[in-house]
Image 1 (spheres, helix red, strand yellow):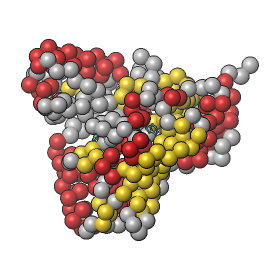
Image 2: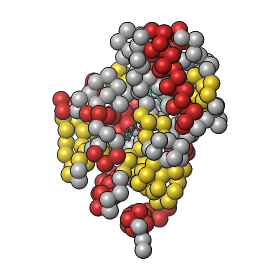
Image 3: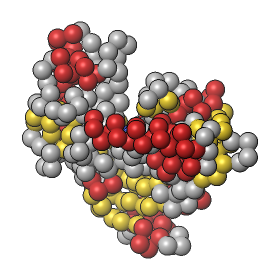
Length: 309
Ligand SMILES: Cc1cc2nc3c(=O)[nH]c(=O)nc-3n(C[C@H](O)[C@H](O)[C@H](O)COP(=O)(O)OP(=O)(O)OC[C@H]3O[C@@H](n4cnc5c(N)ncnc54)[C@H](O)[C@@H]3O)c2cc1C
């Protein structure tokens, strides 16, 4: 007899183009910037908003738990992988109306949004140049850089919430430092899926924006490690950047298996090539305990641990 997972796989394959975009027991490492993560029972790549919606609804229908991943640049996926369906959100597209309202599909790369809107003379998201995530992931974690935050310009989000499409306005989104309404709801089925979002941009000189963006890109090249990572592991504390405390605790360069506290940027734990999720997790726990013992501050995770630990 076919399992619910097999039947779901069959239904997903029948979505036009689905044959090439459904994978059983697929390792998730290639879909994360950490290049770490065991297999998902089932992976489906959604290339349009209706596909994203349909895949989620089918998973629900078959009683299979479902996790949406953008570019996997803010997660650590367990070595045992993820049970159920993982939807890779590849639905992209954006437009800015004459009044500066940007409407963007949730799978669009943040970097692409920054480049396109700045080139068209709209300011508001230019600070996100070089961030390797999707718009959906950036809303979940209220991504930010150089003093800008997604939440500053976000107007509304269209979500699929328990099978129903709804639009949530900014005050309902609980945007805070590296958090949102979405982040506080446990991942998998309970969390609404972000389909589309609107942002309020303002007119600006495109050449000035692009000059500033080139400087910020260079800042990333100069400052960030080159090895695979998920960016900053911990949130900044009320008083200090997490990296400062980690450096003061003499943890720069500390290794566990193939994972290392980057000698270049102490708040990055990098994959030296052979790191497992357990290596990274063990190292981040060690960092957290050492910093707490030295300074009495408990570091809070910025990245999300997902899957079966
Ligand atoms: C080198 C590097 C530099 C970085 N620099 C920055 C930086 O300067 N500032 C910053 O804020 N972050 C930074 N990041 C972290 C990361 O890129 C951002 O947080 C990014 O916005 C995450 O997007 P993502 O698509 O990769 O999310 P993912 O990692 O795929 O997902 C993150 C979480 O959001 C959920 N999610 C994703 N899409 C959806 C959706 N459509 N609906 C519902 N839930 C969803 C996932 O289930 C997961 O729980 C950096 C990361 C790296 C590797």
